Amino acid sequence: MTHNVSLLAFQVQPQLTNFVSKIANMSIGENVRTLRKEKGWTQEELARRISISRGRIAQIEKDSHADVKADTLLSLAKAFGCSPNDLKNGWQTESDPLNHFQTHMVDIPVLDVELAAGNGTHVDAEKVKEWVPMSQDWILQNNLYDQNLVIVKVRGESMKPRLQDGDLLLIDKSDKKPVSGNIYAIATDDDLRVKRLQKRIDGAWVISSDNKADPTYQDEIISHHNFERLRIIGRAVRVLMGNL
Image 1 (tube, rainbow, N blue to C red):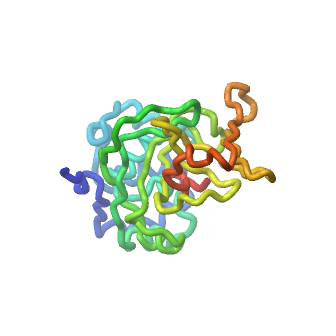
Image 2 (image 1 turned 90 degrees about the vertical axis):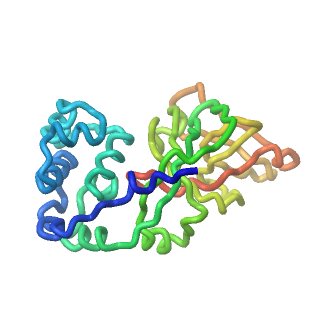
C-alpha cells in the first residue's frame, strides 16, 4: 500500500517565524488570509490547492464567524502546514505557534470507514485513505502511542452536541476496556458506531446517545452475560478540531 504521507506532511517554511506572533487569537478567516498572503498565494491558487471555489475562500476570509466544515478545515490546515485546531481557534500566546511549528510530527492514518452516530454503518473492510500529521509531544503528554491511533469520520447526529456530523475523530485502538461514561467506537455484527457506554448497578451496559432531544435515538441495554456481542474498537480521544 502506498502511503500518501507527502500529501499531508506539514511543510513548515522558515519565514513563518517572522509573522506567527501576529496571528495569535485571530479568527479562522483572518488566519486563512494571513497565511495565504504569507505564502504569496491568490485566493484562486488556494482554492485550486484544496479543490473548493474561490468564492468560498473569499467568504471564509471575510466572515470572522464562518462555519467551516471539518473536511475543508483539514484541507486548509494541510495546505498551510498547521494544525486544524490552531487554524480554527488561533494560537493563544505568541510562543505557541513557534512551538507548534518546531515540534516533531507523526503521521496518523485516516481509515476509509465511517462511524455512525446513529443506527450504524455497515463496513466490509478498513483501508487507510490518507495520513494526518499530529504532534508527537501532544500524543506523549496524553499517555498515548501513535501506533495505536487512527482517525475516522463521524456520520449522523445521535451524539450531538458533543460530536457533529462530519467530525474527524481520533480513536485509541489499544483502549478496549470500557469505563462507564466514556465514548467508544463499537461494532455490533458489522455495524460500526460511536456511542457512550454506561454501566448499570446490575452489571448491564447501556449503549447511549448524547442527543436526548431526538426520540429516534433510544438507549440499548446489553446484559453482562451478552457483553461479548459488543466489540469495542477503541476509545474516542478527541475531535480533530477540539476536545471531547
